[in-house]
Length: 305
View 1 (cartoon, rainbow, N blue to C red):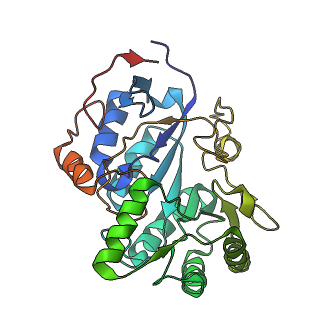
View 2 (cartoon, helix red, strand yellow):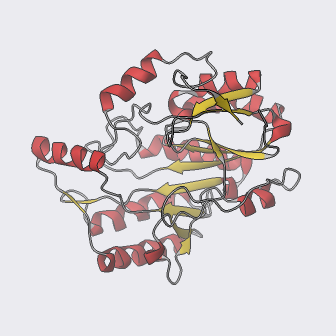
Protein backbone atom coordinates (compact mmCIF):
# COMPACT_ATOMS: atom_id res chain seq x y z
CA UNK A 1 0.00 0.00 0.00
CA UNK A 2 1.35 3.42 -1.00
CA UNK A 3 0.43 6.37 1.19
CA UNK A 4 0.35 9.81 -0.45
CA UNK A 5 2.45 12.53 1.11
CA UNK A 6 1.12 15.93 2.21
CA UNK A 7 -2.47 15.11 1.39
CA UNK A 8 -5.55 17.12 2.25
CA UNK A 9 -7.91 15.28 4.60
CA UNK A 10 -11.62 16.06 4.29
CA UNK A 11 -13.58 15.44 7.49
CA UNK A 12 -16.12 15.22 5.97
CA UNK A 13 -18.58 15.99 3.20
CA UNK A 14 -20.28 12.64 3.86
CA UNK A 15 -21.15 13.11 7.53
CA UNK A 16 -20.72 15.57 10.38
CA UNK A 17 -17.56 14.30 12.08
CA UNK A 18 -17.05 17.28 14.45
CA UNK A 19 -20.63 17.09 15.74
CA UNK A 20 -21.02 13.32 16.15
CA UNK A 21 -17.66 11.59 15.76
CA UNK A 22 -15.11 13.88 17.42
CA UNK A 23 -13.93 11.15 19.81
CA UNK A 24 -13.53 8.68 16.94
CA UNK A 25 -11.62 11.29 14.93
CA UNK A 26 -9.24 12.02 17.79
CA UNK A 27 -8.66 8.30 18.17
CA UNK A 28 -7.52 8.19 14.56
CA UNK A 29 -5.28 11.21 15.16
CA UNK A 30 -3.58 9.42 18.05
CA UNK A 31 -3.22 6.15 16.13
CA UNK A 32 -2.01 7.86 12.96
CA UNK A 33 -4.08 5.93 10.41
CA UNK A 34 -7.66 6.00 9.17
CA UNK A 35 -9.73 3.79 6.87
CA UNK A 36 -12.90 4.35 4.91
CA UNK A 37 -14.94 2.79 2.12
CA UNK A 38 -15.03 4.54 -1.23
CA UNK A 39 -18.79 4.89 -1.88
CA UNK A 40 -18.19 4.65 -5.62
CA UNK A 41 -17.16 1.04 -6.07
CA UNK A 42 -16.82 -0.08 -2.47
CA UNK A 43 -13.02 -0.20 -2.20
CA UNK A 44 -11.53 -0.05 1.26
CA UNK A 45 -9.02 2.79 1.51
CA UNK A 46 -6.46 3.63 4.14
CA UNK A 47 -4.31 6.69 4.72
CA UNK A 48 -1.81 8.08 7.14
CA UNK A 49 -3.22 10.88 9.22
CA UNK A 50 0.07 11.70 10.95
CA UNK A 51 0.84 15.43 10.95
CA UNK A 52 3.91 14.97 8.72
CA UNK A 53 1.69 13.39 6.04
CA UNK A 54 -1.21 15.85 6.22
CA UNK A 55 -1.03 19.26 4.57
CA UNK A 56 -4.27 20.32 6.27
CA UNK A 57 -7.62 19.05 7.48
CA UNK A 58 -10.75 20.50 5.90
CA UNK A 59 -13.52 20.17 8.47
CA UNK A 60 -17.24 20.44 7.63
CA UNK A 61 -19.88 20.79 10.32
CA UNK A 62 -23.09 22.31 11.56
CA UNK A 63 -21.88 22.04 15.16
CA UNK A 64 -18.22 22.31 16.17
CA UNK A 65 -19.02 22.28 19.88
CA UNK A 66 -17.91 18.66 20.49
CA UNK A 67 -14.61 19.25 18.65
CA UNK A 68 -13.67 22.42 20.54
CA UNK A 69 -12.26 20.56 23.60
CA UNK A 70 -9.83 18.77 21.28
CA UNK A 71 -8.41 21.86 19.58
CA UNK A 72 -5.54 22.19 22.06
CA UNK A 73 -4.39 18.67 21.23
CA UNK A 74 -4.69 19.21 17.48
CA UNK A 75 -2.64 22.39 17.77
CA UNK A 76 -0.07 20.70 19.99
CA UNK A 77 0.33 17.97 17.38
CA UNK A 78 0.81 20.72 14.75
CA UNK A 79 -2.18 20.00 12.55
CA UNK A 80 -3.41 22.75 10.25
CA UNK A 81 -7.12 23.11 9.55
CA UNK A 82 -9.88 25.18 8.03
CA UNK A 83 -13.48 25.01 9.14
CA UNK A 84 -16.49 24.95 6.82
CA UNK A 85 -19.30 25.97 9.14
CA UNK A 86 -22.89 25.59 7.93
CA UNK A 87 -25.04 28.20 9.63
CA UNK A 88 -28.39 28.77 7.94
CA UNK A 89 -30.71 29.50 10.85
CA UNK A 90 -33.44 27.56 9.03
CA UNK A 91 -36.60 26.59 10.95
CA UNK A 92 -36.52 23.32 12.86
CA UNK A 93 -38.86 21.79 10.28
CA UNK A 94 -35.83 21.58 7.99
CA UNK A 95 -32.98 21.14 10.50
CA UNK A 96 -34.57 19.39 13.50
CA UNK A 97 -31.44 18.73 15.60
CA UNK A 98 -29.06 21.49 14.55
CA UNK A 99 -28.23 23.90 17.42
CA UNK A 100 -29.70 27.38 17.33
CA UNK A 101 -27.79 29.90 15.24
CA UNK A 102 -26.93 31.93 18.35
CA UNK A 103 -24.96 28.94 19.67
CA UNK A 104 -23.18 28.13 16.42
CA UNK A 105 -22.32 31.78 15.79
CA UNK A 106 -20.62 31.92 19.18
CA UNK A 107 -18.56 28.87 18.22
CA UNK A 108 -17.66 30.44 14.88
CA UNK A 109 -16.39 33.50 16.70
CA UNK A 110 -14.31 31.28 18.95
CA UNK A 111 -12.74 29.53 15.95
CA UNK A 112 -12.03 32.84 14.24
CA UNK A 113 -10.40 34.28 17.34
CA UNK A 114 -8.16 31.24 17.51
CA UNK A 115 -7.30 30.63 13.84
CA UNK A 116 -8.27 33.86 12.08
CA UNK A 117 -11.33 34.74 9.97
CA UNK A 118 -9.79 33.29 6.78
CA UNK A 119 -9.89 29.82 8.36
CA UNK A 120 -13.64 30.00 9.11
CA UNK A 121 -15.68 29.45 5.95
CA UNK A 122 -19.34 30.22 6.49
CA UNK A 123 -21.78 28.08 4.51
CA UNK A 124 -25.28 29.47 4.00
CA UNK A 125 -26.07 26.21 2.34
CA UNK A 126 -28.50 25.27 1.02
CA UNK A 127 -30.68 28.25 0.16
CA UNK A 128 -33.89 26.29 0.54
CA UNK A 129 -36.89 28.00 -1.06
CA UNK A 130 -40.21 26.86 0.33
CA UNK A 131 -43.66 28.08 1.28
CA UNK A 132 -42.14 28.86 4.69
CA UNK A 133 -38.80 30.28 3.52
CA UNK A 134 -39.23 32.44 0.44
CA UNK A 135 -36.70 34.89 -1.02
CA UNK A 136 -37.64 37.68 1.42
CA UNK A 137 -37.11 35.30 4.34
CA UNK A 138 -33.61 34.45 3.10
CA UNK A 139 -32.61 38.07 2.55
CA UNK A 140 -33.67 38.94 6.10
CA UNK A 141 -32.12 35.86 7.71
CA UNK A 142 -28.90 36.19 5.76
CA UNK A 143 -28.53 39.80 6.85
CA UNK A 144 -29.00 38.81 10.49
CA UNK A 145 -26.38 36.07 10.25
CA UNK A 146 -23.90 38.13 8.22
CA UNK A 147 -24.12 40.92 10.75
CA UNK A 148 -23.47 38.51 13.61
CA UNK A 149 -20.54 36.87 11.78
CA UNK A 150 -18.90 40.08 10.58
CA UNK A 151 -15.20 40.00 11.35
CA UNK A 152 -15.23 36.24 11.99
CA UNK A 153 -15.29 35.14 8.34
CA UNK A 154 -14.43 36.58 4.95
CA UNK A 155 -16.16 33.99 2.75
CA UNK A 156 -19.68 32.63 2.44
CA UNK A 157 -20.34 29.52 0.35
CA UNK A 158 -23.86 28.88 -0.88
CA UNK A 159 -25.86 26.63 -3.17
CA UNK A 160 -29.45 25.78 -3.87
CA UNK A 161 -30.49 22.20 -3.01
CA UNK A 162 -30.26 19.45 -5.58
CA UNK A 163 -33.44 17.42 -5.52
CA UNK A 164 -32.00 13.93 -5.68
CA UNK A 165 -34.49 11.09 -5.22
CA UNK A 166 -33.61 10.81 -1.52
CA UNK A 167 -34.15 14.56 -1.03
CA UNK A 168 -37.46 14.48 -2.90
CA UNK A 169 -38.65 11.66 -0.63
CA UNK A 170 -37.88 13.80 2.41
CA UNK A 171 -39.51 16.94 1.05
CA UNK A 172 -42.61 15.00 -0.06
CA UNK A 173 -42.87 13.54 3.45
CA UNK A 174 -42.48 17.02 4.95
CA UNK A 175 -45.29 18.32 2.75
CA UNK A 176 -47.62 15.48 3.68
CA UNK A 177 -46.92 15.95 7.41
CA UNK A 178 -46.80 19.76 7.65
CA UNK A 179 -48.09 21.26 4.42
CA UNK A 180 -44.72 22.96 3.79
CA UNK A 181 -43.89 22.87 0.08
CA UNK A 182 -40.23 22.95 -1.01
CA UNK A 183 -39.54 24.57 -4.37
CA UNK A 184 -36.87 24.40 -7.07
CA UNK A 185 -36.81 27.93 -8.55
CA UNK A 186 -35.54 28.63 -12.08
CA UNK A 187 -32.10 30.13 -12.67
CA UNK A 188 -33.42 33.67 -13.12
CA UNK A 189 -34.99 33.66 -9.65
CA UNK A 190 -31.89 32.07 -8.13
CA UNK A 191 -29.72 34.78 -9.67
CA UNK A 192 -31.92 37.58 -8.37
CA UNK A 193 -31.74 36.20 -4.84
CA UNK A 194 -28.00 35.44 -5.10
CA UNK A 195 -27.22 39.01 -6.13
CA UNK A 196 -29.21 40.22 -3.14
CA UNK A 197 -27.23 37.95 -0.82
CA UNK A 198 -23.95 39.09 -2.38
CA UNK A 199 -24.81 42.76 -1.78
CA UNK A 200 -25.59 42.05 1.88
CA UNK A 201 -22.41 40.00 2.28
CA UNK A 202 -20.31 42.82 0.85
CA UNK A 203 -21.66 45.19 3.49
CA UNK A 204 -19.99 42.98 6.11
CA UNK A 205 -16.72 42.33 4.31
CA UNK A 206 -17.77 38.88 3.08
CA UNK A 207 -17.42 37.51 -0.47
CA UNK A 208 -20.07 35.12 -1.78
CA UNK A 209 -18.95 31.85 -3.45
CA UNK A 210 -21.25 29.62 -5.50
CA UNK A 211 -20.77 25.90 -4.80
CA UNK A 212 -21.47 23.62 -7.80
CA UNK A 213 -23.51 26.32 -9.51
CA UNK A 214 -21.54 27.91 -12.34
CA UNK A 215 -24.65 29.64 -13.66
CA UNK A 216 -24.58 31.82 -10.54
CA UNK A 217 -20.92 32.80 -10.93
CA UNK A 218 -21.43 36.35 -12.11
CA UNK A 219 -20.40 39.83 -10.99
CA UNK A 220 -19.53 39.76 -7.28
CA UNK A 221 -20.23 36.01 -6.95
CA UNK A 222 -17.12 33.82 -7.24
CA UNK A 223 -16.74 30.14 -8.10
CA UNK A 224 -16.29 28.06 -4.96
CA UNK A 225 -13.36 25.74 -4.38
CA UNK A 226 -14.47 24.37 -1.03
CA UNK A 227 -11.32 22.27 -0.79
CA UNK A 228 -9.00 25.09 -1.82
CA UNK A 229 -5.32 24.20 -2.08
CA UNK A 230 -4.45 27.82 -2.87
CA UNK A 231 -6.10 29.08 0.32
CA UNK A 232 -4.44 26.32 2.33
CA UNK A 233 -1.03 27.17 0.87
CA UNK A 234 -1.52 30.78 1.89
CA UNK A 235 -2.68 29.94 5.40
CA UNK A 236 -0.18 27.12 5.93
CA UNK A 237 2.92 28.04 3.88
CA UNK A 238 5.06 25.44 5.67
CA UNK A 239 2.64 22.64 4.66
CA UNK A 240 2.06 23.10 0.94
CA UNK A 241 -0.44 20.48 -0.26
CA UNK A 242 0.27 18.29 -3.26
CA UNK A 243 -3.11 18.46 -4.97
CA UNK A 244 -4.72 18.93 -8.36
CA UNK A 245 -8.19 20.10 -9.27
CA UNK A 246 -10.50 17.12 -8.89
CA UNK A 247 -14.17 17.98 -8.56
CA UNK A 248 -16.43 15.45 -6.87
CA UNK A 249 -19.48 16.24 -9.01
CA UNK A 250 -20.62 18.44 -11.86
CA UNK A 251 -19.33 22.03 -11.61
CA UNK A 252 -17.40 21.26 -8.40
CA UNK A 253 -14.23 23.34 -8.22
CA UNK A 254 -12.47 21.48 -5.41
CA UNK A 255 -8.92 20.24 -5.26
CA UNK A 256 -8.39 16.55 -4.52
CA UNK A 257 -8.63 15.34 -0.95
CA UNK A 258 -9.11 12.16 1.06
CA UNK A 259 -12.63 12.14 2.52
CA UNK A 260 -12.60 9.89 5.58
CA UNK A 261 -16.34 9.97 6.30
CA UNK A 262 -19.20 7.65 5.39
CA UNK A 263 -22.67 8.23 3.98
CA UNK A 264 -25.75 7.31 6.03
CA UNK A 265 -24.06 8.13 9.34
CA UNK A 266 -25.21 11.70 10.13
CA UNK A 267 -28.15 11.90 12.56
CA UNK A 268 -28.85 15.62 12.08
CA UNK A 269 -31.88 14.57 10.02
CA UNK A 270 -31.94 17.62 7.74
CA UNK A 271 -34.70 17.48 5.13
CA UNK A 272 -32.41 18.59 2.28
CA UNK A 273 -29.57 16.14 3.10
CA UNK A 274 -27.96 14.36 0.14
CA UNK A 275 -25.71 12.17 2.33
CA UNK A 276 -28.39 10.01 3.96
CA UNK A 277 -30.69 7.58 2.21
CA UNK A 278 -32.56 6.72 5.39
CA UNK A 279 -32.62 8.72 8.62
CA UNK A 280 -33.13 5.59 10.74
CA UNK A 281 -30.03 3.97 9.25
CA UNK A 282 -27.94 7.06 10.00
CA UNK A 283 -29.12 7.18 13.60
CA UNK A 284 -28.48 3.46 14.09
CA UNK A 285 -24.97 3.65 12.65
CA UNK A 286 -24.16 6.63 14.86
CA UNK A 287 -25.37 4.82 17.98
CA UNK A 288 -23.53 1.61 17.06
CA UNK A 289 -20.24 3.06 15.82
CA UNK A 290 -17.07 2.07 17.64
CA UNK A 291 -14.98 5.12 18.66
CA UNK A 292 -11.87 2.91 18.73
CA UNK A 293 -12.35 1.49 15.22
CA UNK A 294 -10.16 2.49 12.30
CA UNK A 295 -13.21 3.46 10.23
CA UNK A 296 -16.67 4.85 10.93
CA UNK A 297 -18.40 1.82 9.45
CA UNK A 298 -17.42 -1.88 9.19
CA UNK A 299 -15.06 -2.74 6.34
CA UNK A 300 -15.56 -5.69 4.01
CA UNK A 301 -13.12 -4.89 1.22
CA UNK A 302 -9.39 -5.07 0.50
CA UNK A 303 -7.24 -2.12 1.47
CA UNK A 304 -5.91 0.17 -1.27
CA UNK A 305 -3.59 3.13 -1.06
